[in-house]
Length: 150
Image (cartoon, rainbow, N blue to C red):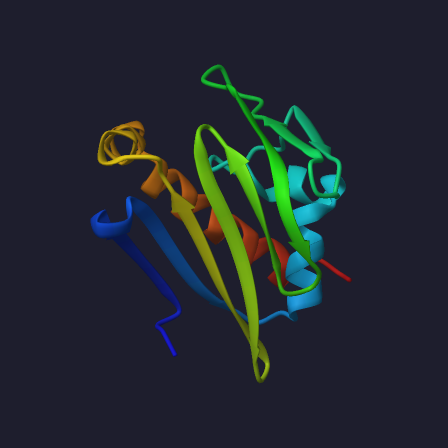
C-alpha cells in the first residue's frame, strides 16, 4: 500500500513513477483515461479543457491531445497494450508509458510509469517539467472522477 499520492524519479530505470489512491473503481478510471469526452475535461495541467482529444482505443491506435493555451503542443502516441479495466500501455514522445489500476476496497491504486529511452531522455523530461505537469494532471483526474457522475 502507498500514500494517497507519491512520485519517484527512478534513475536506475530512466522512469518517472506516479501513484495515487483514488476513490473510484478501476472501470471508472479506465473510462476516464480512454473516453475523449472525459479526457478533455481533466488532461490539461492548467485545468482548461483540451482543444483537441482523439483516442482510437485499440492496439496500434492513436491518442492525440492538444492543450488550449498558448503553450500548447500535441501529445501524440500509440496504444501498445489494452487490458480493460486493469490498464493500458502506450508510446509517446519517445517514451513508454503505462497506467495500471488495482482495486483495494473502495479505492483504486493507480500507477503511472513513464519510462524514457536513456538517462539523457529522462533528464530532458525532468527539465521540461513533466513530473510537475503530470502530478497536476493526475490531481485533475482525481477531482474529475470524484465530482463527475457515472
